[in-house]
Structures are given as structure tokens and as C-alpha cells.
Image 1 (cartoon, helix red, strand yellow):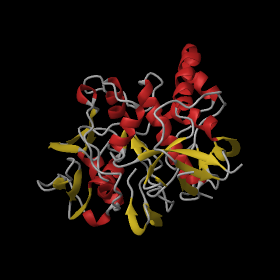
Image 2 (image 1 turned 120 degrees about the horizontal axis):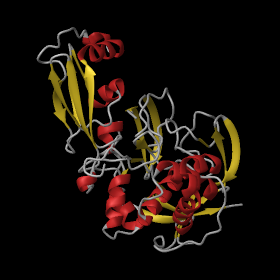
Image 3 (image 1 turned 120 degrees about the vertical axis):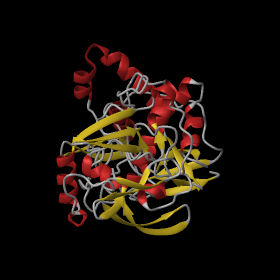
Length: 376
């Protein structure tokens, strides 16, 4: 159990910040979840509407980690030392054991947390990313895992975590990484090991509690506040600037009008959409402060932009829509739910000289670094 002790795409690039095909991370998916938990010292219960993390498919009635804890990482143990930055003086988070059980392709596998993290960081972010950005990713993934280890988040596999990014975080074994990286395996593995090793044991906390370290591929100019996506306001998951510059991801997705009508009516029969599309079909009714679609009219009803994103498989809710005859085009900015750390934004900050602690504090407002300690 958990104890806390204090004082003892190139220009408009289509290449995503993460290595997985998801865009959204931190184990969030589309689905409705009832969460009642204690976060930052107060009780919060909410009916959460959680549209998917780069990975964005509907997850049925599983726990949404929007309070203190989640995830784990990789597969073979490097010997590494902890590097600066150090945690705030006296900040320590205690867990019972550093050993976790990971469901890998459906098979429960025990491994050390730090080993697991190598496979997660390698799967979630390109090895070519800046060292400080890889370090920030390692801390986010470790914090996300620790939430599960503390029994504050659940994996639908029954294990502590799994390798399904629709439920937890992506994970790749050394053999899978060899297939992916080929001749660059040794070089890339050393970069990942270095990031995990240089942050060994480091997690992010808010008021002494492990945070829900959500992350995604690209946010565009600004990240999104948690309440706009998950119906729950957390003080460290608020909208902040994300300077992705000319590398921000912009995608265009074209659909036939018939396909759009078919998908929407299947998901929302009350929409009663028909062809040809009416002038007020797909009419955006409101946007959040970060520019993402909050509400959109579909035929005879109005739904959240996150719902339409799920139904059509859009890259993000920061979209514009153009109807041109039999074609409907969505132009999306960013990739993922937009909450928490933007991997692309983190990489841009690292390029400008920010260290991993500065990156984490920027994207997770008001947080501090702490060190994991184990009773074993």
C-alpha cells in the first residue's frame, strides 16, 4: 500500500511525438467511468466522460486514473545512478515493493519497476527525442505506474498494469525493440536506459500525493484542462502553453458525407442525420479556452466534441470542419486528448534548454519531484 512521508510534425509534421499509434497516453480511453477517490486531500466523485490518449478507443467501465497514481515500465535492468534534479527536500513516497506484475500480450509477467519503464519509454516516445524530454517521459510513466502499484488505479487485465495503451501504457520487449530499431538498437536502447536511469525512483507529486500523470503526443499551442475532457478539475492538470512551433501536428481527415452520416446515426440514432447534409449539420456550438471543440450539432442533437472525435477517429478535438458537396474534411491540430504533458511540447522545451524538472513542473502545474521508497 501507499504511504507518504515528508521529512524522513516537421512543419505541420505527421510524425507523432510518441512511438505508439495512439497520440493519447496515460491510460485514458473513450468510455464512461464512475470514479470516487481522494485526491490532494479532498474527496471527489464524478461521472467521467473520458474520450481517449493518442490511443483513443472506447474503454468499457474501467477505472480512470484521475487521482494519484498509475503505470509502469520496461524489460531488462540497466545499472544506473540517480542524477539531478533532486526532489524537494524530504519528499518520499513509500510503496510495498518495486516488483510489479505486467500483462504482456495477455501473459502475467513479474518485473522490476525500473526495468518495465525502459519498455514503456521506448514504446511511448521516439529514442531520438531530447534527453531531458525522455527523462520527463520516464518520470511521467513511473508516476503513472506508481498509481497502479498503490491500488489507486485499476488495470482491466487484473494485473498491476498491461501493455495495452487503451488501458494502461504501451510497452515493448527487447525483442520487439530489436525488430523496430534494427541496427540502431544498441544506440537507442542506451538513450532510453540513460533517461530511465538518470531519473531512477523519481515521481511527480502534488501536496505530497502521486499525481495522475496524463500525457499525449501533441497539444498544439496549449494543453487542455482536465475538466474539459474528464469532467473533473484537478489543480495540476490545467491548460498551459505548449510551444510546439513549426513542428506542431496538423492533419486533414476526409470522409464521404455518407460515411459520416452512417457512423453518427449508428452511434447516436437521435441525431437522425440524412443526406444531403443540412447547413446546420456538424455546426460547432462552442470551444474551450484552448480552442478545442466543446459542443457540436449533429443532425437533431448536440454532443461533446470528444464524442465526435471517438466516432470518427479524429486525431484531436481541436478541429475545424468543412462540408464540400459529398466530402467532409476535418483539419485537426495536435494529437491526443491534450491533457497533461505534450510529448512534442516537452521535446521543444528540452531543445531550448529546459531540464526534465522544469518540463514536468510546466505541464503539471504546482507539482514537485519526490523519490519512491520501498518497504521490501
